[in-house]
Length: 255
Image (cartoon, rainbow, N blue to C red):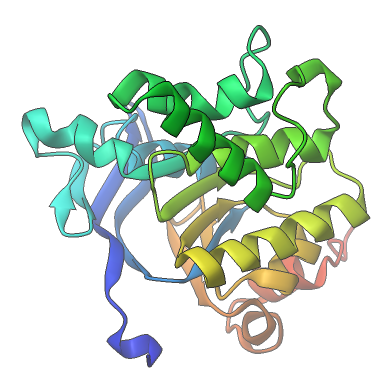
């Protein structure tokens, strides 16, 4: 399907976010299309993680709306929790419960929000761990996992309720280059095999050039998106010199 004909799975409309006395983004609009891998980038303090929390309905915006498959995650009243459960979230640390096994961590959303029999929940969780290349990790405790395995288990849990829109906060943070590259390949497989769309908060350039379809560059000075496009195109062709500098990882010339 041509990218222009793909449906929007997330639509941000005229969003203003922040808090009294501090606006991070003002009147910003953009779409995330089905099967896209979109990175949210920018310098420290530009609002990347706040934007992710706003998209998933944890941070009420000051103005504007956010539609998840056409339904407002801001203005849908009692239906908001159902919309939120249609999203898969992985926070930077993986956020596994230390007192639960890996299998129990992946199964946790199924325990909380479904009436499936335990056999079905365990089978689903095991299948997800296998899909994340952790078929034997179920009995382990989080403290026994490597950093990469913690991230994979977090993604497996994010998928447990059948989400096909995943939001990942710094998935490669703290990982060595080989582990980060393997995780990137896993994200590509999930996109291709499970028809997933990804919003990824990160400034890891290796991962961005490896898997990003688009990048959204936030700018705290203008409180806007100053770049939206493929990272390789933006590196060479952005009209904004700071964007080109960012993608080229070049130091300031006066330092």
